[in-house]
Image 1 (cartoon, rainbow, N blue to C red):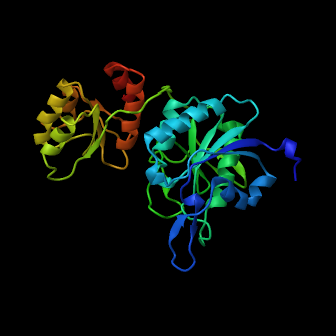
Image 2 (image 1 turned 120 degrees about the vertical axis):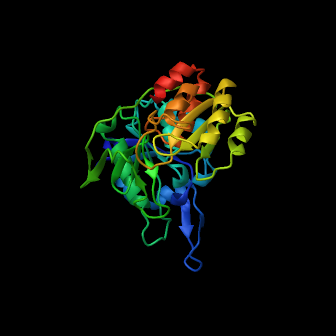
Image 3 (image 1 turned 45 degrees about the vertical axis):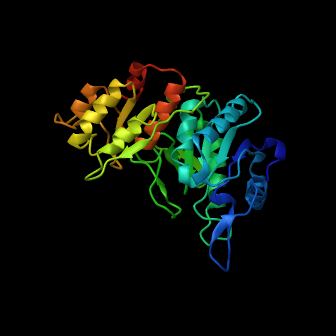
Length: 328
């Protein structure tokens, strides 16, 4: 074993989630049971490979996390990023918002040191528990020089993803996370291997997130008054999860035009798992017409990530032209 002074040093933020839960042997139900320190204490293999500092910033399910919590985390990470005595940062959180909070951090925190999010799909005492493997792998990725400059990463099931495009595809399996662009890399025999390049994009130093930006998902026969309700209820922006390349029913076209004229940002995304939204179809409700109205096509960003990017840019007072350019 290496001398302690030679071990790579990581800061581990704990926020709660399944990784801090236990499964009851009799009922089979899962419930929160551990502090961050107690959970890490059980992962004894970490101590032989890393010098760890724990920051227990929250203790809540991933489903309870908000962008306000994300902002609290971002402010703490900005301070930790400036330290020269650490090699990397790991954030443990619940998986329900693993495709949101890491993306928020990626667009609001300049990552001088690697930041790797992980958690577990299975709880302590579960037969298929992935907690140790995920935390150990995330720490390994965070301390690897190849991870510098790549922005926020997400690590699960021996696989490395970018926070920009990772999504939760499965509700319960340990291979729940995927990206339509494929993984960035993986860990093979405890070695970090990257398959494609990426870098952190523009960072917006948001200090507030108190903007109202709901998401409206299109479906066959969507009620026409839903958009009017959102537009009239004080929304700063609205994200539409449209069909295909970014199309909506013809009867929603006019309400969208009115909303844009009122100064509401309208982002049009696709409800498809893969692909982009862009101005392709030139008919009433088609992307070409919507873009003429002044809506913004989201490109490769899905609805939840588009909402986060819009909020981060509004918080920094960016103009409509700057926002449109960022999405393009």
